[in-house]
Length: 269
Ligand code: IP8
Image 1 (tube, rainbow, N blue to C red):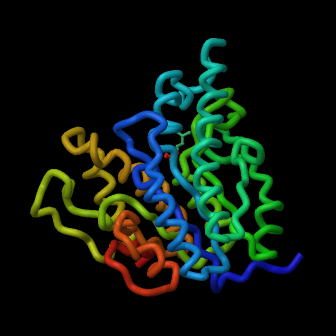
Image 2: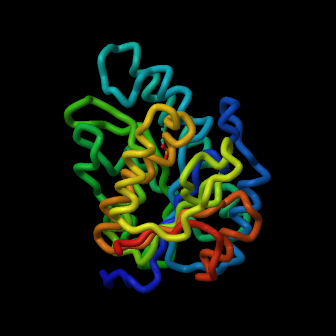
């Protein structure tokens, strides 16, 4: 099996808030999915892994049945099945659109190749992903309900998956497509004067992490806080992360082409 080339591999996370309406339930943004997949096709990117979040598909049943906390009673089992199933439905919508746009994407089911231990990835059978990349396919994964060796089952976030994949497969860059322009010093949806960070290093990120922990901003920055925590190991290992707005037309195409976009770049130094 040939060695993966570090030079080109990018890992793209598409946030659940970009491809679904988080105020609804099972509410895909089909127009956004079509636009994003067209941009991926237009960028002509070759070495790419896509990971998407759960949005209004995975999160409602995961919350209803407390899947993240692990197995406690039999009544949760149908919730585990449902959470995984609705993620395959969202994934199917993205896959339909990618393939319609002639992107050679192949869906890889996280719950079939990953086992976590207390919520952290412990076993990851990634040889199919490596083989797909070597043939210039684009593997597509997602946050999922997975088996956990201590908890019975749990929720694996797309964010942990992105960091792990990037480190295992020697990616040159992680791109986080979210619904704001990057990391701010306050919540940009509430505070009009919030300042966007253009660049952050590891220490600055860690300082922000404690700020984002504060209950006053927890609601809206909870998602961003979770991302920041998961990004740290990848950043530490030298993989830069671009956090950018995937809802702005043209941004995903530009970033995949290696062109500058507005956003926050998180690097080791
Ligand atoms: O949206 C969670 O993935 P995320 C997926 O990346 C589920 O946190 C199943 C809730």
